[in-house]
Image 1 (cartoon, rainbow, N blue to C red):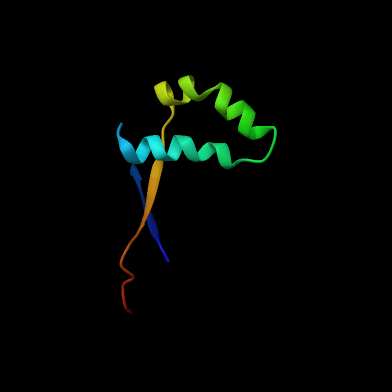
Image 2: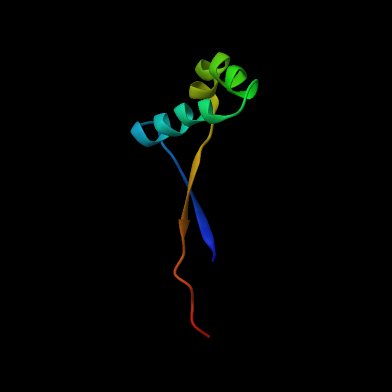
Amino acid sequence: MVFRPVRLEHGEERDAAILATDQHPFPGNLLYRAARRHVRAVGVFFRLEPLAEESA
């Protein structure tokens, strides 16, 4: 399957992606939590959308 990246603009979906960084195991979750303000300011997040497969 082939995917295309779609950049998440500021909004609910992007905020949910940032909050999901708490799911990292220790100590990564603490590092992301400590840097959340910076991540919100400059982080770039993408959603992957599947492309329709072409039949040969």
